[in-house]
Image (cartoon, rainbow, N blue to C red; front, side):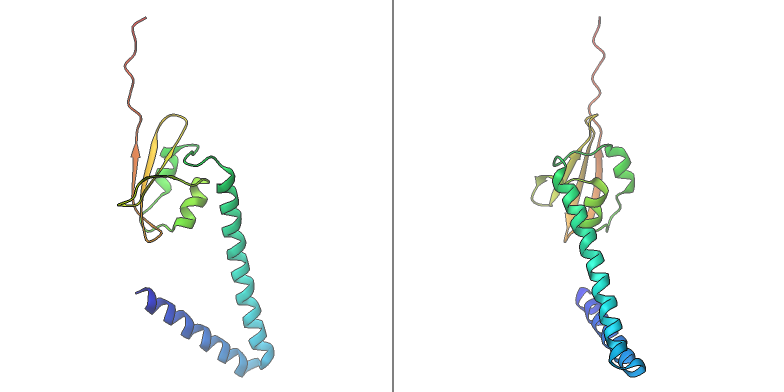
Length: 134
């Protein structure tokens, strides 16, 4: 499936380049190339700013695990997950590859990843401590 998607994108790029060359000559080809390079630079800049912010944060710590758990969905890319949590997770299992984030209240968000995509998301609430007699 992934190979077919890449092949389709390469064919689309070839058709766009050929059409631009046929309609506007070398100026059209240069316009398409410049737009493609500009788009790639924007994607790279976004990724680097997300990784910079996550790198500065304490690993495995988020502001509100319950809020983040409502926004995480299966199929979400790893880059979008790091942008959402604003930190890197703490690895808690190798198979399946599971990462965890904890908030100040003790709630833990566990996310299972497969091929850089979210497979499962689980919110683990902290154990309720019984009230101690005074």
